[in-house]
Image (cartoon, rainbow, N blue to C red; front, side, top):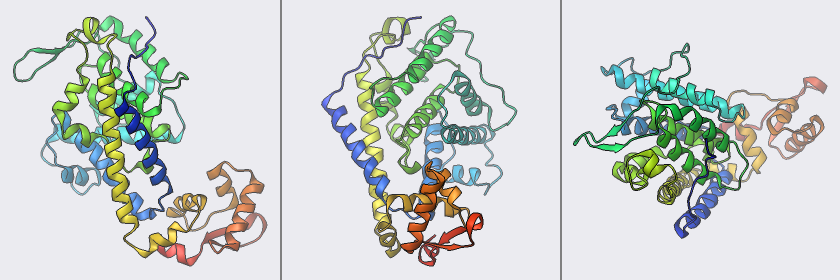
Length: 358
């Protein structure tokens, strides 16, 4: 199996949007977003991702119904198939978050498990999905004409192994562009009969979030695709033939990369504007803005616990024990933390001003 070497060019549009993506990423990173608001924005982004990604594949549940379902406000909607898709996508997002937390890389096994969740629901006893063993064909639902004929089943395993090798290889391709290619190549190989689109979008999410483009977890690209489905499908249609071997195998995919990067820039800008409006709406955000970057980051620990120790600080920032103790002492002096206890029993809580904001 030949090495996978995607063919694309960096157009002016791609270059400009990459610059914009970097600008917004740094802007949002420095925004002192209230932890409660941050959790709310993250939940909204997750619901949006689930709703629009499954909607692309024909799911009929509204965004409110999706929210109610995953937050257990309703037990059923009367649409069993649609509910199963929602729960499966939600479980797959949770699995991806665990992989990111563990600093995992993409492997064939975890790709297979993501697909199993997407198509099988949230059953914890699910087995990994094996690749298709027969040819599949994508047809136009109205005309019945062939839209795309993926590679033969006998080639799928080799293509996926090379695809995963490429994902984890060291290269100088910018992360957003590599994410775009991951999406494209997975649906091009089409290793399953069903669930390829949803799995591709989840792999894209994993890669962006895993390598620093999570934007605090408050954006999703799925709405961009869903709001212009024809544009989405047109951008994915590459080459002179619907046959993989005659059209898409070695095609120039600049058109898709340009589409993807443009959508990413739009999604980043939209969420940045929203976060800035929220950030400027209350006096408490002005207080948080005065904190330095590490102080704002450590606030996430206080979301789930009232007290922390220097050991918690060391583990959170990957500091030495001595550096963590010194930082905690400096924060006490600055009025950010208050301390109690001595020696190994010493613990810290937020000053009342910041605790009230949380």
